[in-house]
Image 1 (tube, helix red, strand yellow):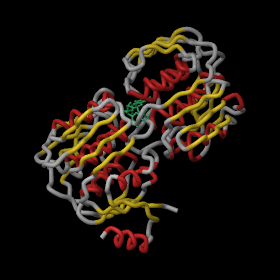
Image 2 (cartoon, rainbow, N blue to C red):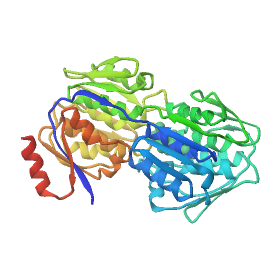
Image 3 (spheres, helix red, strand yellow):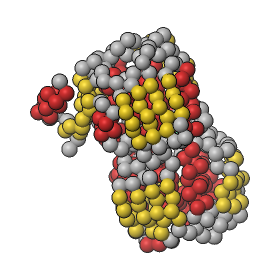
Image 4 (cartoon, rainbow, N blue to C red):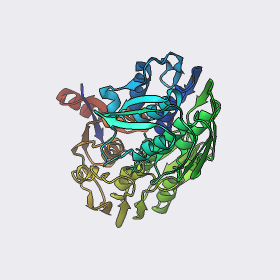
Length: 433
Ligand code: UD1
């Protein structure tokens, strides 16, 4: 049954929220976990759809997966009996490609369905494949599958033509048990790259330089058991920071690494939001009209593309003219049409959104076009006067755990209800009026 969110806007978010583990780190780490035949314990796992789909795929190839609780999983890869992964569900997530690097690295063979993920433009994987080929693998794409195999993998100097999070992680996975030394130049530097490298190192890999643009990997012959806790999710944290600011609230966002949020905190401060940093928390508050700015998405430590729709929504409510330039993905402004139904004034020219700030928004029936855009629409709904319903929330559930629960705990009027359930709508309206 398809669900939707119903939101009554206009309440400032106040209180405390605890951020979960980083989805994009967890996806790389779960794939890495199957590379040892010993048992691995992973903690601070976010309980979101993408993670659950990947775990199903890992179970599907024969690995032992024991979900101790929603946030802790034990994986043993010694029982893997298949290196072919081809399910409808796995085609829908982006990170299925990490199983390619992990299986190729461990067994010198992997056949994985071409990845899907959010429709935010063309998302080639040529750099992943270039990396595998450089390590000595043969790679063929046939019938919607990527088939890779090698007699053995041998370390190589690899220069990435574009800074790619996925390719950097995938090449690290494939190279950590290759013979000799691999160097990845022009590597991505995102916090989750560092986290996947730290996890692999905790299993006995020898990876240096993760977090810089040059990663050096000395191949090891085997990996061993490990217990590991995933870093907090930078984007979930950023989303709550923007939601607090947009609703003129005051929220303490706990279990974060403030250093990872600097690009977001910097921009929020620039437009007049108060951001106070603690060791593992940030407090975000705002009580006056915010001002305009210019933002361009860039690889880390630049402003994250995964925060682009949320910050654009905030700027849509700030005074003056702002511009948001999307430099990573080619089609990431699909939410703008939905936002305009709520009264925003945004014009998209190529990869630039020109935003004329408005004073207020009004509720509307809208549809989430993808994961982060969906989160941005929720923020708009929380600000808007009246009721907003948001369809296609399965996108949002790919990356946000209990989004409505966390928002409600901060004072929002927001509920998940079945689509086309007029009674549920009336019940919600009665409850919040
Ligand atoms: C990851 C994240 C996603 C985030 C993105 C950028 C996961 C599962 N997803 O996606 O949430 O928005 O990083 O921070 O971690 N490119 C190529 N060839 C390639 C690979 C990438 O041209 O082989 C291009 C892409 O089209 C894009 C840019 O490089 O323009 C960055 O993509 P990449 O960093 O690879 O993104 P993903 O790993 O897909």
